[in-house]
Length: 481
Image (cartoon, rainbow, N blue to C red; front, side, top):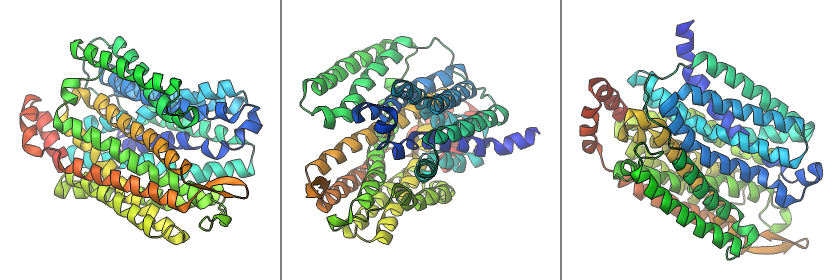
């Protein structure tokens, strides 16, 4: 039985990561109909997405740090439980206030991936760590690609609550499997939890992401948005000062400022921006009316199926990315992934009218995302002490989230300024979509340059010696993985 649990640890953790991504995307097909279903205005309904984004961004580094201190398995189970409870609440109600609160609970699942990566680092033999971490990183894209068409099918052929009943059942299964198959990691970093630091980071991130996500609606120069950005700068400045003085900070800023940690974080932000433009723009483009001259007028189900090959590709290529890292190093894999994303956008610029070419371009972008996302956690694991792996990976995932939020705002701004009237309604022009591809592709090239500037292996040898012989052997394997 113990041997079976050990063999199932990686699949169970990967299932949890896929569930997390599915939970974030299942509400998308519902958004156009939710004002009618809940009796709430569209501006209020949009908070069902915003609440998940905000809570996920805040809780990812916080729960990562809690996992390093109190046990990664314990915090992982808590995150999965909150996700499942949130889904159950959505299944039981049509009240928009409760729905928004429940979606905020589901945001806790964003910590599943960094916690799982840290558990894999602590528990697996070094030879298996690289491929397992690559698979875990790819679950974000896999779950997103699977969740959209599946949710659209449920919404189209069943009551919308059935979708949340299905995700509740899946969440309960994932929680039970994790409780059974995942062992508690013995690696801990003792000390008192930095509550003040957690509150400061939460306040700063809420101001930042709320401003970014609502800027297009409220107006970028409106007093509310400007006030949020000013508050964000002030709060985060005070937070950085507090973190530098804290004995056990929530985020070790001195460690995070080192190039071998800071540059992967910057590249994560840029890659998150570049990755999100693919699915965001593709979904809108193929659903555009045929009267535009470029649109295909596809249903939400067909749109999800267009993105599905990208998710399958991410699943199949995750072990390939690990082999590339083993042969050339994760820094090269990260740079290659960013370059492939840029090439995917080049294909989109060349042809965004034919469905088969749209699918090919989107799949190429997903291929690059697989390479990049598989390399990021390996770089972080090599650069930080064993006792800070969950919190450091949590910050890395946070940077991806911020990149995605900024991408969403930037794409919306571009499309709003490039519209034409079709049937009396403003619709983005093809030129607007192509500009969005140019923007995302350029960011991918900048990510490639940032990846190539990450310092190489020699800088890490002193850190490995300080962790002892066992930790050094593991890190040597991670360098190869």
